[in-house]
Image (cartoon, rainbow, N blue to C red):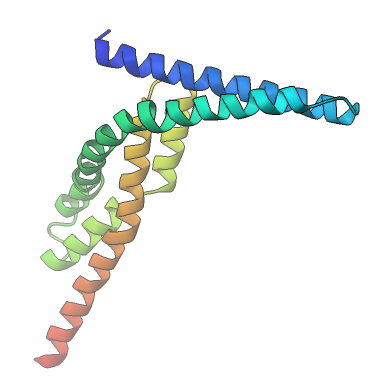
Length: 165
């Protein structure tokens, strides 16, 4: 295991441990409140843990994940076109005009629900790093935002050209 992966796993373990500690403090607070006991010390501990959690997340964990996500997001975005879209460009070669095939490519490359499900499953079973899951879902969001609009614009351009001739 490389040092980078080990550090990422260690940071993730610390983050998960801190989340579990917070959940425990919230359960303790609810128990004390329901039994009309003093909750001041639990609140003070929770505030301390929240500061630690905030520092861990913003300065250590998400700072390192952020750069990796940006690079991977671009890669996944283009892979959507190659893996999901390009086959339709080739399959419909003799059936559709080039512009229509490009529209079909953009529409078939559009994906979000599948990518969200894959990321959730990958994270749940430990086979996907959080930054990969974030980048994959981010690429899916971008595909939903841009690919259908580009396909529609290609169709409008074609209709406009047909109307002017």
